[in-house]
Length: 169
Image (cartoon, rainbow, N blue to C red):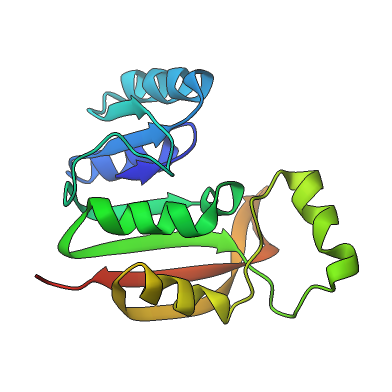
């Protein structure tokens, strides 16, 4: 399951031979993703849904890939739902903005309001959250997201790259 966006990652993964289901809350984003898949000749199932209540049965996916979407929702509920739809032994990849230093209470609300975030977790809060969601064997790290700018690579916002595996039954 790939969560969010215009279908770029979903189409890329489909091109590698994966069976991909893309999820987004907004119909206009799904329309863009469907157009991309059609233009690229990729087979991807796109579903309208909320990451806090995805319309899938438990253990439906071997992999859940969330790209810069969890922070925009009720983070704890979204991660619990990722865990619910993962098959035993499945893997969650979640790439999110995170705080590397504590954010003072007096300014915490500013970025939330500006970006529409449900929250910004500190790097040490992510592992705790994954454990509560029954995800094990976690690896967390900070990376600089990279984007190409006219042939150059430009460093952008620090993000968390986490890999969590659902415990086998």
